[in-house]
Image (tube, rainbow, N blue to C red):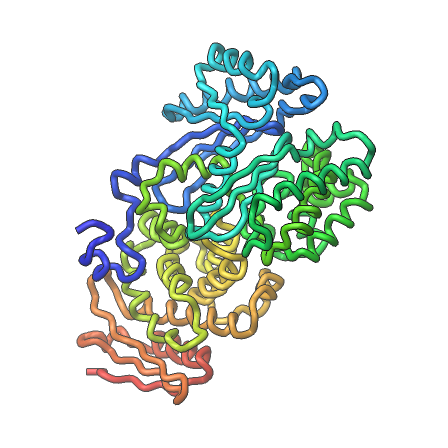
Length: 515
């Protein structure tokens, strides 16, 4: 029966049967897309078979096609040369990798420039690439679909800023709603007369027009685009934030205000050096910051999140079958990792069934985090034994995965750290632990120690495991050994069970079925 059928549900529980071996998913391996924007030209080649795709190749050139276009009406001559050189390189690389055909789209600069059609013809003649020019609403739709790649079922407002334009799209129930485009890109704002006062007045008026059309006070504002990511990186530096992962980085409205003020009074070269930003990008940040400040002031979002996924990921999402779109990107990616790297692929499901009874009380860890930890519990086994705990933590917290908040990254990391090490004192990652509450840390430790113990009760993927039960009110941890597993419950396994009981609040241990 297929992934939506009864047999699949009985087989795999609430997460459904893996789809990465399905022909419709395998067809997404090595999908190549090119985005020709006003600031940059980028090619990404996705390994898109898993729901949370890997970036097989990712290269960007800050060509600046839209620089000066507001005054001349034409593409920047130097930008055209740089963009053409990048496109020639990308086409040759894709051809050598066997990626065909590439999907290439162009946005505001090529769309609005007087010589945009001639540039497209030159690209076709010199590279064989067909450059599809999309309008502002289509650009907004694709960017919003990129957000859906990372957040299935997302609700809120997507804001994608480029060099020449800024797009807004509403997300409701995992579907893209109204879209609108505005001429608020920082390249264009450079041409507004009246100095900083004139620019601010222009931004205020344009954002007010957007607010008349789109819903105010969205549940979440998703920020897409290089200028927003640069501002987020500056915010991270200002706050001394410990996890340098931009995707799902959260900022409050007060954070935005403080960071915009910080940008206004700090030398751009100092900002660039402190935060590892390029010269072309930092030149656009002050104007983009003014737009963000006004956007947040007028729309008053409840939450603000950075999305590293945008138009390019939206182009991949466009090609996904709906049943793959509907999957949890974290779980599908973890399954893919287990199939590829674990010693016993498939054991993660059995381990999940074994440890889940420990986390059934109210306020316990989310089942998807438990599932992800079980799937990933053994994928780093090739690392040196002395460093497996550190490798596990480092890989999961820095992995390019969607569908995971920063808190969830660290939760998973701590659980996997304890899969291989009993204590975390003296860890080089101690600063990251501060992103979790004390209760989060206790539960992640208990999960990791449950994985550590469960992995000892089997010698092959076909062995019958016992069962665990936890009675939190009585503080009793019960282990019921399966028939024929007594020999597996040796002194090391017993010590690990005691460590798990301690992590569960120094629970009393009851072992049944020793014969």
